[in-house]
Length: 207
Image (cartoon, rainbow, N blue to C red):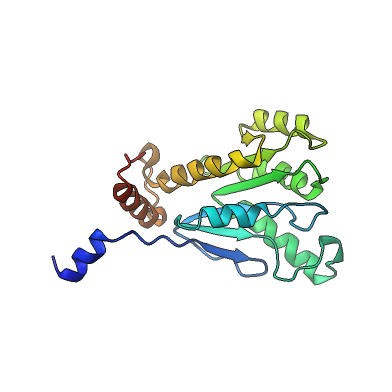
């Protein structure tokens, strides 16, 4: 083993997540894809996406963020921008490995509610995951919880619980290349990186 190889082996495994925002084209990825559903421009909404992306920045994932830099409110989008925004979000929902929904108790979250309904079909693959956070104060909280139970979507009731739920989902998706004997060649690089990361941390593989 060369000195350079030894140095890489002893050093920390580099894992840098990537953030893709609308209207960037959605491309093929070997890494776990996480889509944050719904509008970030609703009145009173907290910046939960940025918080999650920052806390999971060292994970080998691609985050799809439906917000735009200097984006106006959803109601201010006009013409082709409306179509572009809606199409981008629907494509993300269909292509993602993990769809994350947050129902803030202080907002109506009508777009999020619509996309949650769409997720039943869009995220129908057994290899896709849906993780929902619905605060008790949300007007339709009971409906959302019942909907999640009916469709076997994982849900939590506090924003603080969303991070560990998403972290676990990312871990499980990363090892799906070997799940039930199914080998998905496009996920193998991600699997290898996650195995290496767990070994560095002294953790037991879940594969």
